[in-house]
Amino acid sequence: MKKLLRFLVKTVILILILGFLFVQYLKSDLNKTFDEKQLDDLKTEIGKAESIPSEFIEVFNKINPITNTNGVLYDAITENRNRECPCVDLALIAPVNGKNRYTGNRYILGWKLEKEFTQEQCFNYYVRNYDFLYDNDGIFEASEYYFNKQLSELDFDQMATLTLMLKNASLYNPKRNAELIKKRIAEIKTNHNTVYN
Image (cartoon, rainbow, N blue to C red; front, top):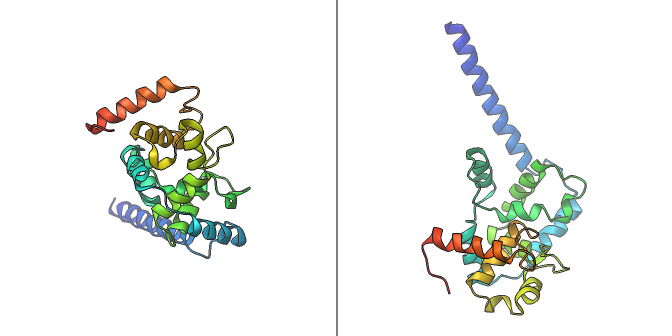
C-alpha cells in the first residue's frame, strides 16, 4: 500500500512538473506557432494603436473586469467567466492567427503579447479593429454609426451598449435587439448599485 501511494505521489509530481515545463515552452520564443513576420506586424500595429478615452475603459472594466491570460484560464477552470483579457480577445481577430485557429492558440498569443504590451495597449488595438457589424470596423466608426456621436460624447448606456457588442455584436445589435440591451444595462446598473449618467 505504501509503495502504491509513493508511486502515485511521484507520478502526480512528475505530471505537474512536465505540465509546468510545457506551458513555459508554449509561452517562450522557442514555440513557433505563429508566422514571425505576421506576429511582428501585429506587434507594430498594437504599439501604434492610440488610446481609447479612459471613460470607455472604465465602463468596460465595470461590465467586464480586465485580467490577464492566466486570469482568464483560471476563470475557465472555476467556471466564473465574467473577466476579459484584451490580449486573448484580440487573438480572435488578429491576422496572425490565420489557419492556426484552434482554441489554445489564442491563449498562447495572449501570453506572447503580454510579454511586450499592457492589457490597455491590447484593448486599444482590439476595440479599434473589432467588427461592430454593418461595415463598422472599430469603436469610433461604431460610435458614429449607432449613436451619431464621437466616442468621448457617449453616455454610460451608449458605452455599455458598445461594450456588450464586444461580447457578441449580433446578439447585442442596437438596431435589432434594443430591448435586450436595455434589460442587460438595467441588470448591470442594479448589480453595481451605482447611478450612471
